[in-house]
Image (cartoon, rainbow, N blue to C red; front, side, top):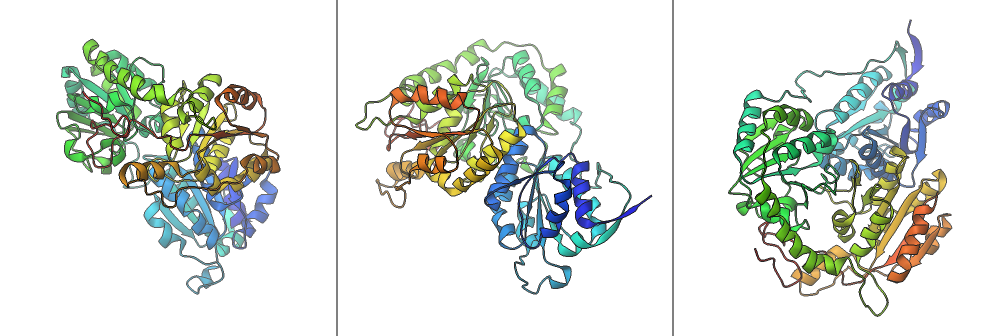
Length: 574
């Protein structure tokens, strides 16, 4: 028998039915009716009050990436709705499942420029998998079910529900909740095509120099173990994109590092030597390929992706397998011959050794500077080592991101959370909060620069209120470091708008009740890290970083992927 309930209560019940237990949000006038109802559900729907709506979306992203469940955001209309746009666009670019619920004015006021009215659908439709305006209470269960199904299946992504006041306060007949598992014309889990699987297996079995590039899709599909099994069976070296990091354990002998602009020398060079490349769950981003005109022209390319729109978008593929990464790899496994590519795998060693001598020796060891400033690499590796290489790395965007991607080690999947496609500064701190809530059994290490930290540092208040034990490491060089590097290398040292006069970060942290300390010199580093790791609470280290520290190797903009700078003036010689 049905019962009469308001749309706001239907929303709370629907969220519970979808397995939601955490909401990241910020209340306001046009969502207040929902919050009034949420008051009675707070023992089951835990609301995290962020300090800015952008922080809510990034926190939801970190939560989703850490635990695999869609993150949920609730904000009001107008400026609150527009404040979440950056995070929504970021989630679309990085295939992160989130459901954003925005308050909206009454239906009769739509289009009248009512107070705090904005065209949420018009703004968000280009950056979502689906955006829908709920105008009546009766629509709530259907809209929520559709939202979660679309957000979490196929290629995951963001969904927006614009929740009008009428729908919140109006009544409906509630007769239970039905999840959606089918939408006509939407096929989120296509069957691997037998002909494509056969063709791909033939290419791999005949290859003498095969290579796998693992993207974010491997992590999304939970296909890490399947990928390891295939790589080991056929003895194929594996490289990862930035978002594919942690899909393959760092210490696995077939793991050859990261590809891309600041990737490792060996996989970048070998991309243009391999005769077969199997790209799994990746989209051939320009930061991965370098100049398309010279990218892997010698290789037959097998592209596995659940999103058919990625096939031949940038790089021509000889075989396309339209399927979930895990299903595709499991279909391939029985057809792949046991093989050995000893010489080919060993050929990755020489470029690796050059990198160790020319780059890593500089980045990972203490340097003699007038004020004791350190290298980013030595700080990141030391944190990783002292934490047992089993924490979750969350980064901001810039030099801190590239260095952390290179030197933070991992043994478990879902260990690297960063903003890839959109490159959103300010992502790190709120995303780390979400990750810590989504995976409370793991330590979360948030590496950020002084610039990115100041974009969302108000979220220290969220950490304070909810006792979120995030370990914060600010790599502080008083510059927007990545932009400074480009200005130095390509713009004749024209340092315009990149030098920063920073406040006392330790004092700010302590004002929020978060223990913090300055780390000025290398001899202070180990003790500070030990205190941070052993702390049961959040902890901040403000680390003195060499101002002119740069990230190498580097594929310069417009250069071929194997045209690699190992310092400002020297290129890798094959």
